[in-house]
Every structure is written in C-alpha cells, then in structure tokens.
Length: 280
Image (cartoon, rainbow, N blue to C red; front, side, top):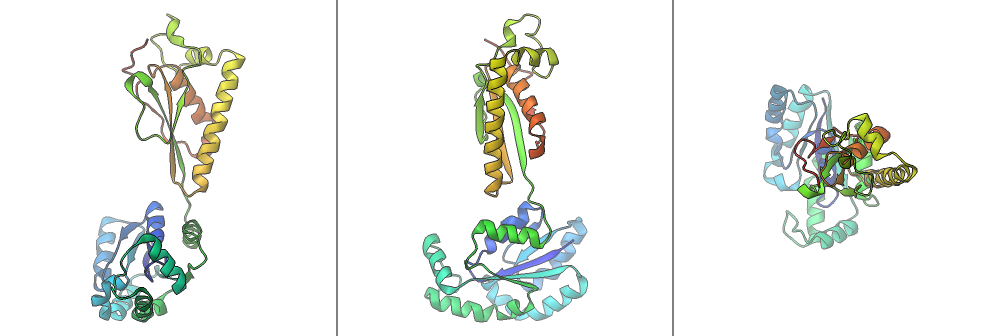
C-alpha cells in the first residue's frame, strides 16, 4: 500500500508521473500542502485505498514551512512512504515552457524562477528516496521508469464490440471494421432469427476460402493496430466491428477476434445491436 510523494521542478515531468500512477490504479491528489499529508493518509486508510500518490511543489510554497515535521510524522506511520523528486537542466525546462506557453508558478523571468525553485524545493529533494533527471527522457521513457520503479504493470485492454451500421457506428471506437462483404445469414430463413454467437451462423459467415482470407486480414490488421497503440503507451484500444444490422456477421467476427487475440487482454465484448437489430 505505497504512499508516494511526487515533487520536483516545474516542467520536469510531474504531470506525466501522476498520470502514469493514476493509470496504474493510484488515488491521486495534486498540489497538496504537507500539513495535509497525514489527513490524506487517514482518509485513504478509512476508504481502504491501497495505492496513493500526492504532489507537493512550488505551488504550495506558502505551506512548505511545515514540510519537515509533516514528513517526520508521516514516515513514522508509513513504512511504505516514498518520495520521488524530478529535475532537469534549466535549458531543457526553458524549452519545455516555451513549447507549452505556461506561466511559471513563481511568476518571475523563467531562468530566475528555475533557480528560485531549486532553492525552495531543496529540502524536498533532500528527503527524496529517488531523484530522476528527466533532461534526456521522453514522457514515455519517464512513464516506463516509474512503472518499473514501483513494480507496476502497464495494463493494456483490447475492447471489441459489434454493431449494425443502420443504427450508426459507435463514436468512441479507435478502429471501425466493416464486414458487410461476408456472407449474410439473414438470407437463410433457418438462420435469420439467430445470432452470430451460434455455431451454425458463424459457420455460414466463414463458409468459404474467400471469407477465411478476408477474416485473416482483418485479424492481422486489428492485432497490428492494437499492438502499435500499446507500444505508444496507450492503456486501451477499442475496435468496433460492423455489419448491416449487428446480429450476424459482426457478432461472429467480433467473437472470433476475441478468441484469436486473447493474448492482448480482450475486454468483455459488447454486441450492441444483437437484441434490437432489424435487417435489410
């Protein structure tokens, strides 16, 4: 049940670290004065939260006088307390600020602000268990280092759903696959009222070599797309498979994809239109 205090220079990557920890299941509180660390610990214990991270930096400068006693009290209560401090070369921080057009919290000229901030946060840096210089790190590299540091897994989920185009494609899909070129079981009276989850319907959809070839190409493209999303640091990727009504072909393909791509941690499949589809 780690309690992590994240601090560091403005522009050094604190937001990246907090997002990484949040995605890994941490409860996050940004810009928390040291005097409230103990109260936060009481709160998360009462709620049964196992992973907690707070940030304290130059924005809380009016409260940093309580830094040392607050740290001592919390460290006596938490054997798993960890302080992570981020820093970077001033020229790199300047470049990052110029790109983001943000105002520095100390409000002077940037190079003067960086020097003042280093001095202001020196006590926090001295308390740190780990100091990371992000000068030469990308956001992705920093995120990966933090995950390794706390032995966290970068969870990735491939979400697959089926739908009918006549009911409109879902808006939140990363990739929409059109399978209307596959054989349509709707035209078989025996299969019309069934769904693509039933073996005889699926067999009809994949009944010939051309259909199998088409499916194999779809499967390989979905895998490649999902793996590329995962490699960029994404935690999830949604694929929507569509046919005309959303009951036969799209359902059969989505179900088969879930089976074939199980190594990508496939989420619960949603067959959106399977109960209400109307067919042309």
